[in-house]
Amino acid sequence: MAEELKKEQDTSAHLERMKNNLDQMMNGLQHSLDEAEELAQRAGKKQMQKLVARIRELEAELKGEHEQSSEDLQTNCKSEWRLKALIFHCQEQTRNLIKLKDLIDELEVKIKSYRRQAEETGEQANIDLSILTNALHGIGEALERADTAERQVNKLRAKAQGYLATKVVSETEK
Image (cartoon, rainbow, N blue to C red; front, side, top):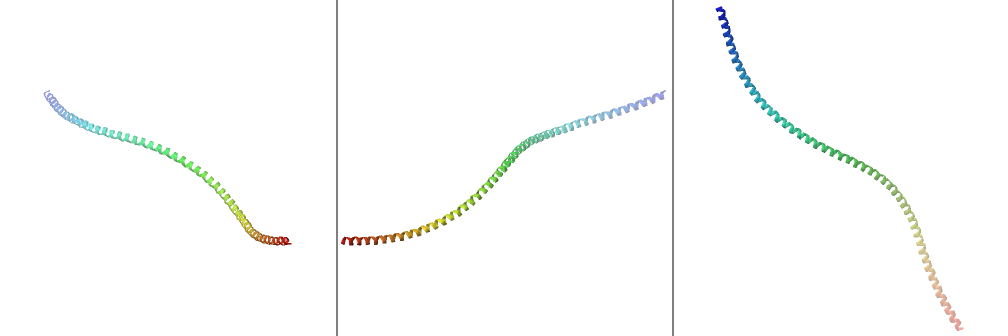
């Protein structure tokens, strides 16, 4: 029994040493764990701060993108409105151009008609001028003949007066 007691005491001592070793190992591991947790917390806090800063940056970028998107949308709406106005204006101009072309065609027809009338009137005027020229030439000739006839009449009157005067004188003498 003494031997068994000694064996049990040896086993108990051995177990006690192992327990102490395990306690020391556990304390060391606990200390390492605490240090690791503390480092992890510090690193986590730093990482969290970095992530929070990154989130703020991303939120600021997102806000800027929203503002830019809003401005782009407004610009797009204004551009669409201007485009619609320009399209309407172009359509109006096209309609006006078609109307003007129709008016030009009508005016060209009238101009051709007026030209033809002017040519006909010019031809008639030339004919009338020719007739007038001939008539004036005839009047000129008639005036010359009338002048010649009047001169002859005047000569004959003068002769007749001279003849009458001589006849009156000769009758008075008689």
